[in-house]
Amino acid sequence: MTTTRDWPLYEVFIRARGGLDHKHVGSIHAVDARMALEHARDVYTRRQEGISIWVVKSSEIVASDPTEADAFFEPARDKIYRHPTFYDIPDEVKTL
Amino acid sequence: MSAAGGSSSHFAWVLRLADTNLVLAQRLGELIGHAPALEEDLGLANTALDLLGQARLLLTHAGQLEGKGRDEDALAFLREESEFLNATLVEQPNGDFGDTIVRQLLFDAWQVPLYERLTLSRDPGLAAIAAKGVKEARYHLRYSAGWVVRLGDGTAESRERVQGSLERLWPFTAELLQADDIDREMHAAGIGADLAAVRGDWERQVAATLAEATLERPRDRPWRWYGKRGEHGEHLGRLLAQMQVLQRTHPGASW
Image (tube, rainbow over the protein chains, first blue to last red):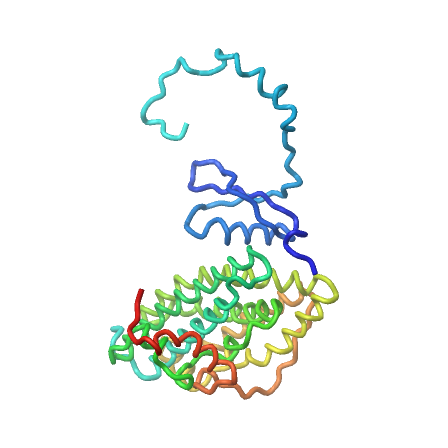
C-alpha cells in the first residue's frame, strides 16, 4: 500500500491580501497539481490566511548549496555602499 | 414572511435539509484522525464543519418555524431516530475511502444545484443560509469530484473498488431527486426547489465526472428507502446514539 510519503511534495506559497507577495508557508503531499491546491487550501487557509495560493513541486525548486554559502554570500558582507541607507522613507509607505 | 409560525410542511422540509447536513457532518467527523493522509483528514474535517455550520443555522431556523421554543440543541440531541428526516444516503457508513468520497460526490452534486435555487426562496432565512452554503458546497464538489476522477482513472484496483462504491450507493440517490408531497408543496409555495430541475443539473454533473473518471453510471433500480419521512435503515440509530449520548446522559451539559 502506498502512503502519503510516496506522494510528491509540494511547497505552498500564500498571498495574505492584495498588494502583498506570496510567502512560503510550508509544504504538503499530493499526487497531482489539483490535489496540491486543495490540500494547501485545506491545511493552510482554514483561518482566512489567504486570498491566493501558489503550489510548486519541491523537486522543481533549484536551491543554492549550503556548502557554497561562503562563495555565494560572504562577498556581499563588506559592501556597505550597496545599502540604500541614505534615503528617508516617507511614513506613508507601509509595505516597502 | 416572518420566520415564526411556518406550516408543518415548511418545518418538516427545512428539517430535512438540516438533518441531512447534520448526519453527514457526524459521519465525516468519525473520520477525524483516521483519514488516509493528514491532508485528507483536514479536508474532510473542513467539509464536516461546513456542513455542521449549515445544519446549525437550518436547525435554528426550523425551530423558529415550529414556534415551540426548540433550539438547535433540542432538535439535534433530543429527538428520536424516527423524528430525523435526513436522506438515507448520508447515514450510510463511511466504508473505505472510495465509499466516503462517492457518497460525498453524489451528495455535493445534489446540494449545489439545490442551494443555487434556494437562494431565490421566498423564505428569506432559508435563502440566506443557501447563499452562504452554496459557496462551501461548490468547493466540496470540486474536492469530491477530483477524487472520484483520480480513483476511477487510477489503477485497476482503485477503479474496480470505486465502481463498487458507486453501485452500492447509487440506489440511495433516488430519494434525493424525486419529489414527494412535501417537496411539491414547498416548491409550489416558492419556498423549496423544483427537484426535477435539480435532478437535471445533478445528472449532468455526475455524468461529466463519471465520464472523466472512466466509470460507468449504474442503472436506476427500484428503491424502498424513505429517510426523509423518518423511515430509516439499520445505521442511523447507532450514529445518533453516539452523537446524542452526552446530552442524554447529562442533560443541559455545556462547556
